[in-house]
Amino acid sequence: MKTNPVIHVYGDHVDTDTIIPGQYLTARTEHELGAHCLEGLDPGFVGRVRAGDVIVAGRNFGCGSSREHAPIAIKAAGVSCVIARSFARIFYRNAVNIGLPVFECPELVDAASSGEVIEADLEAGVFRLGGKAFQAEAAAPYVQRIVRAGGLVPFTRAELAARRSDGKI
Image (cartoon, rainbow, N blue to C red; front, side, top):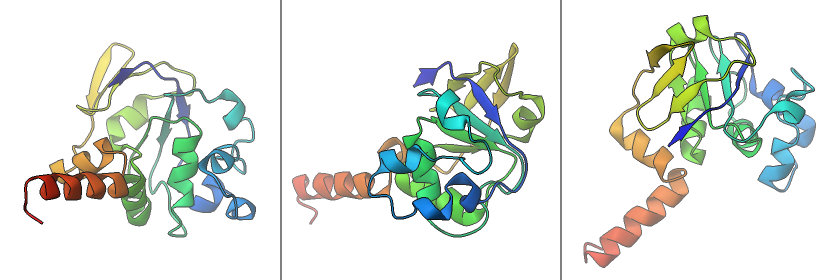
């Protein structure tokens, strides 16, 4: 899937409480979570973000608590992927589990500025910015399959259905 999103740049150590403040953890829908995405860090984010946009951040993005609410809020806000220098381990896994593509690409982080348009090939993990191509670190093929399926639950359902139809279960 190729898109032409706009970049939203944030710094190091953006924690899950910043991504989705605690008072919204009782939200009943993904849409409600998305409506408050990054509210504590950037109150205007939800008003600016458009479907397909990209978050670019520094080190340890998604640190803090292990809540899945944070990547859900990002995805529900319309963000197509997050590119960071590095991710907190539990955030990375939660993002995969809910089908939010995440990429580590320090070179792109160094080159990116908020508001720039970036060409994103999410399947290949290749991003073009200012005429230069950046190759993100590739996730394991199994992880890529989970994200492509839309997350762990849809992936597992599809795998079970395929095994049932093949007579393997």
